[in-house]
Length: 581
Image (cartoon, rainbow, N blue to C red; front, side):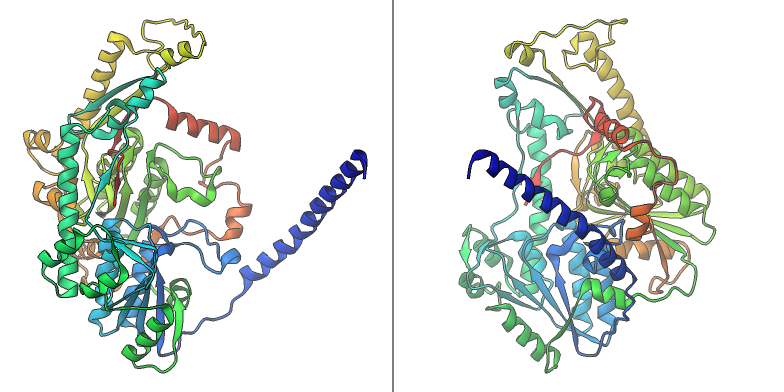
């Protein structure tokens, strides 16, 4: 076959493939349409085991779009998982829980929350059996497994239950090689969010702060393992010194009940629950079946704020991933919607954010203050991290609830900018600038200069003073006391409680208890909850152009605006970047 014939054959194959794909589009469309209108009633019969895959949890709040037409159920949130566990604890048809742990995106504070709900299932007399099925089981995996009264480990697994570590990367050496000068200002000495750019290694302040946070997490881990496994803390600490161990060593140390597989876990659950045949239901299916029809109007609203804070993120660009960015404008609108609802008496606001934009943060803080002026009670529940801007949005609430392992505080400001003039010269590029005022190029990719530095420091001083002033007023603390506990330092939730930055320990369940008590309801009373934003159907998301209730710009303009906002040099109220494991 000559080259021309071969090329023609390839072209024909490509055209044929495109035609087949085009023909499949209407087939897929009508399949999705039929799936979305399926209304099969789901019934849970007696003797059912609830199967919980912790690896399916992807965030604190519900996914903004119902993907049922595609997948039968959407991604699972921490809120939905805990709601399912609470329902299962009181449901006579659910006789036990099968806990599968193969890694999880849940953080330490989220894990503490899940454990409290698993403890409630066990307290109801229902067995919880866990299977650790990762190649390498880490401390976090095992921490979650302590929610079970029987732990099985895959015989081929290994365990690195060896204590908590924090890891941060410092790029200053790389910048030096590239002739890039980072211009970073941090308010104040503990504000380590910019250290990864400015420093070659941890400052003493960052090291001190992280050491204290790790100590709290380690203490919680050690105490939980010892208590749930009936071991002495010294014995658990001695096991951790191994570094890495084989599965059989877990069993020998009393950290596991047996080595086994999923079929053996099912058999064990059958015996423990007193059933003959293993029948199971996933969390997503169970929630669909257990969802009751609301008979009364909700009295409490639940609002989620997750991810880095920006002023306004364009929902029209990435509508299926809205939960990944904390849009101050959008969250403030949800708070306002709840505050304007005469039936809503309290708002529970879940915050999981390292911070970001001061303006975006202040929009939310202002709406919380406005809601309280309308007579609404506002209670904040802090997730894995609610630091810097994540604390800014929370400080005006009536009460703040956090887990001992929540990362919070970080009351400070950071400015980061890269001077690329040396880099451009190194690669042979000449840069020239024309300005109409002395500091017109302050935010360019060139050097700040002495006057520019003074302007930035003055600007940051104003933002920092506003931040600490709000904290002193909102938390009713002495300004000198706030000046001492701020300084950009990250605190554990346990330490923040002692310092007066938060009011009590616990998760969302505890936040609801506080909210009910403050509006005069019985804390044990079950009340309907309005979750905002309301979850949209797949078809609403697909066909409705107005995702925000206001006109949107073309996608290209929205995306370009968003990228500019995230990339531009600016003052940020943001927690330091490090990985805790």
